[in-house]
Amino acid sequence: MTGLPPLALTRLTLARFRSYAALDLDTAAPLVVLAGENGAGKTNLLEAISLLVPGRGLRGARMSELGQRGAGSAPGAVWAVAGRFVTPEGPLVLGTGVEDAAATRRSFRLDGLAPRSQAEVAGRVAAVWLTPQMDRLFQDGAAQRRRFLDRLVWALEPGHAREVAAYDTAMAERNRLLAEGGADPAWLEALEDAMARHGVAVAAARRALIRRLNAALAGGVAGVFPAATAAVACALDAALENGPALDAEEGFRRALARSRAADAAAGGAREGPHRADLLLTHAAKGLTAALCSTGEQKALLISVVLAHAQAIAAQRGAAPILLLDEVAAHLDQPRREALFEALRRLRAQAFLTGTEAAVFAPLADTARMLLVRPGSVVEERARAGFAAAQRRAAGV
Image (cartoon, rainbow, N blue to C red):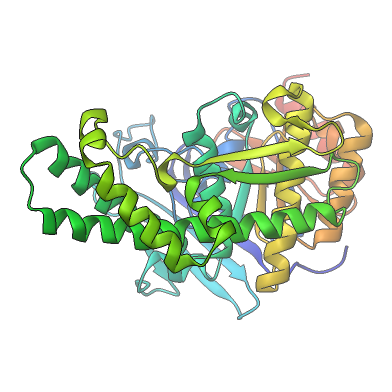
């Protein structure tokens, strides 16, 4: 693969972030391999990149957890992450961080200026990730799968997060009024109207994503990885399947009005997009992901991420940046090589981490090979040098 993908991070700069006091890293390559011992700081680098898009990053960490710790740094210290990008719209400098140790929210800078909204950031840069913690996605509760689904939607529809937030705000206020009792019916009607409007918008965006995912999966984007079919379990999704959005809104609005007493007794709204679940099925076996083996679940997730990247590339002209933490470690050699080839075909910039340099041997002539040590990163251009440097770092 020659040249950079249409969307790529070319330089990453950190200040007082996690295990890095300071770092200025050249990342101008289609594939970037980060190898090092456990605890060296590989995932910290992926997390820093993930924070250059809106959201809480690949760890979902609180702001107080992101500042550098140790070496005289106080917990919650100010921190900053910045990146230089090439994008289809031209070069971009994007930064995020906190300027006050007591801050609970981070700010963004887009070419040095505060963006109008986080959707403006999401409209320029997209990133999707897979981490070892996500291997439990199909054993954990629906909330985890719903967050995963919404991150996928956000990369295609930057305004989706705003709709989710507006729905959650209206729902929380309605829950509070129902719990207190004696609320003005007109006030409840206004909140239920907001829930209906924003809730249907959320469900429609998720539904559109599922259509794109299934189209990409049916087109064979996953290669040797198992074909999958995706769906959303949600009453609003079914309503949108059977009629126009306005009818779905009206039906949801009436359902909320009818269920006030039951929702008050339950402590919150029992139906709505906040209860939705992502369903994934192994197409060849006809098994839901929850019934598949651990290895098959990992392969299904890779299929979804590859399909998602292709869908974004088709809509926005650039695949998202892929952050793949230890993704190759538990794949057999044919599937590792298939993953590497799929990344080449997608024209997506990918960052891959691992503890063993040998796993990435097929990429040594095309990827930027970086050896991660605590607090620092060094480049090894030659395959032999990369492996030897890793052995030296491990004391072998």
